[in-house]
Image (cartoon, rainbow, N blue to C red; front, side, top):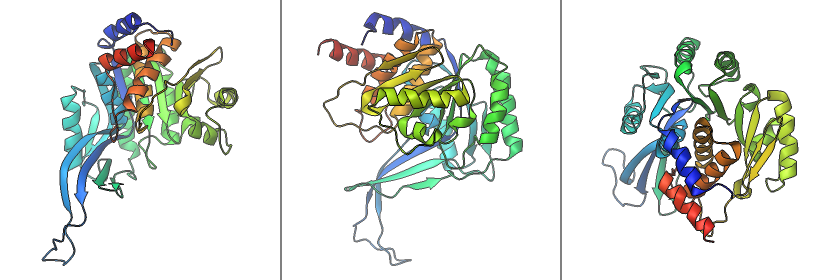
Length: 338
């Protein structure tokens, strides 16, 4: 790793001045403990009553990108999307407000939209069957048209726009991504980074983050060995021939790869001798890479900071963790002293 701690500090001194927008699939992660063997039975139904404990909520999906950005010191964040007028929608707004996120363009819909929520009961056996709300919502073209107008009005003030698609029936469909492409092309001074679980083929001429499973699907092959950097480069360039722009390819324990028409950069993942949980690590990479590049950091510097940040969050078990400057510097110090 070549980046120095002094350089990391210099980059982070600039993150507070960034203006970053996030559009996409915002969700609430709702965790609670569950006891399914209580021997208490409902008088009304005769069925055994389960006990819940320690209910905890956090931002998920595109919301996890937002909380990663705030942990990295970004103070000016706008979100573009939808919530329902329901208990989880109110909780999402509360979580955003706690982070001082601008929710002016987060539309609250009174009907036809359940706030996207991952409900995760945790028993002595681990995570039980998840109960999801809103992941199969259907948004009207009228409301999406309003969101596009909101983005167009805000883009001249943004340094970075992050585009997220996660759900089976998301805010951003292929047709809507094409509409978004037309607007983004009008504002070339903004940095665009996309993380699209299913629709990467439809975004054009910006930075797309993919993992190797997503890359394999996009180039229509069965599997890509994430340990094989040359193979990742080969298939990454095949995808770039179709969509333009550049790729950030996350390769799990093998690091991160960047490819564009002119260069290839890679960083190796850090060796961690501990239990890890990779849930949300991709969001951390997107946030750290975007914020770093937004300040003017080089591609190599941005990759190394994203790599450090991801190494921190994967060590935070059973949560979608974040990484802050102090944690990143401590992780860097461990590497230097190894």
